[in-house]
Length: 621
Image (cartoon, rainbow, N blue to C red; front, side, top):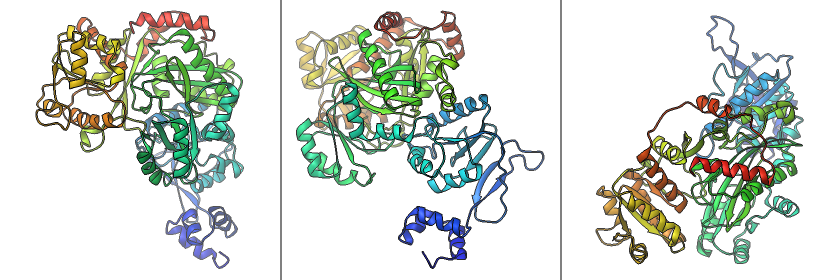
């Protein structure tokens, strides 16, 4: 490092070497290289891309950095906030964060702030010429963001609208003297650090699945011996469920540990007891550090363990008691205040045998924010930005939770038809590349609309293939299959399921499982003889069998259902579609109708929840 001159360092930067790359080559750290650059006066300048081609003054110029001489970015004297975007769109992180960034900009502009966006993805609304006051097309690395912060000297930086990417550099930005707006880096770390978070849950008396953290195979095996299989394993500080897996035995766990430590070597692997056959919920909320506003409670249609970005969900929730709803809201308020959340927070829950467990807390914008905002008419991200710059919930007079006079169903869109060899089984790692929403005043119709929009419309007639795990061979499954039979569908089933249906008087025909000699279920699907599949896996072997069926179903565009909850929803939807006429109404019209019902009131007490659950029943869920 002592032999590095101004000219050598300048040439390296002009050739495109980052501080981190140079630190690796020179066997030092990134901070030392940055300090050397400053000492040798090797600093970037910012050039302007004139969006108006010099025909008239550009109101929102684009800037990019380079190592030359003249700086074309002029710092204003206005109070200003920098918002860090989500970076490249990828599975697990994409447009939902861009939505939050744009709405955050709107909120800040209403409060009189100059808004500055940093993002490296031109295919976003946040990087449109008329969205922000100033835009920097730069990578979301510590080096590049610090360069811009030193140029602009903002009053604060918002890192919680761009997903996990900006959160990774939040502490370092704070260490360099820049103010992080919203939830503190301490609160973010408390939610991410499983040991600290586990201690907090104990203090708050909030249950969570048995868990452990480890960096070695031996420790991982010891943890699973204590908490039992199946387990959900994942690296900490990752997004979109990346590298998450469900392990059913020691061999699968050893294989996972061999590769997982390379995903995020600076953080340990988390091991949680996986709750099979449980309901999952998402709660989005706002907090100003003193009060908490529940933005929406969503119930997943798929089983717990499927990534929230892949699961269909319903708002307001269905199949829930007033006490359970009150518990979800109460836990969310406790967690938001304990983490000192300022802005948005998302909490994910699982409910098994009536007990509500906390799965994780994200003190930032989540992928459900656009859905909840459109379903309820409350612009959560816009309000969150106002809270981050000092506004209070009472100042904003949001009112109570208006569950609106409609039911909204979110369905995911998957890329499987374009990737036929990919595994189609949904699990903890996010696979979807988009989502759609169906709205009406009836659950069945909303579910049907969402199914149509997702490219997998439900059939009105034909044959249903049914394969149930042993735990699902009970009254609930019988009622679903009987309802489908009464609707005129023919029923075919695997041998074990066929025997179960025969014992209970449900007419059906047995077919061979996947992998058995022809003519098995895969061949039947390929021949176009099946219009709907209900296959509920449990355990590793049945999940592997499901892969072959799921792959074929996706290839031939046959709706594929993996939980009894989803099957019941589909059955109700098919029934409703026979007596209902689909209609089109804009989101704005839905909210206008909801507003005619009077001012929404807060839902806080158990009595409020009882009234709300009774109200939800009017949606025929």
